[in-house]
Length: 239
Image (tube, rainbow, N blue to C red):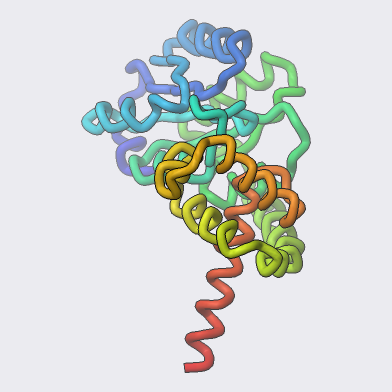
């Protein structure tokens, strides 16, 4: 537990952010947490960074983060791994929830620093209990469970490694687009960079995903970064 969390006084309103774009779930969870005395609120992902920046002087809290966010205002997938990094930098804990069985995504989130995972398939009462437990600073995952998730993450990246060689199939322009995506640029910024239309950029991105045989920009970025890191290490070794 972080120093800021240890300093939190029992009995005071404890901050909990619910970052989930499913209105029924997020509203129900937020109201239930308020009923238990927590300073809970639902917030859209686009406003998270601004909210946390304004709350720098307040006690750190818990973020309940949905891994199935539909996308940002530009329609692009949310890079929740970056969100978790941002939360950790401010001493906020992250508990992830998901309604699907993308275990690789959950494993990556835990490897990025999430303190645990709750499937939405559980009863609402059990999910609420887990969130309350996490908000109180009590571990919701054993060391053994944590090791299992990390091992799943390593195995996933071992499989990804064989796919990263597909990067060589990209055209010069597609590699440029990948470099910008890896830098965190969105489709609108990439279109402006190349002075082309948004449909042209989206077509390039679709072509990249098809060639790499992945289902999202996040997976494509992971492959691209891994190849860059491999090349960097080889360069160091040769020198």
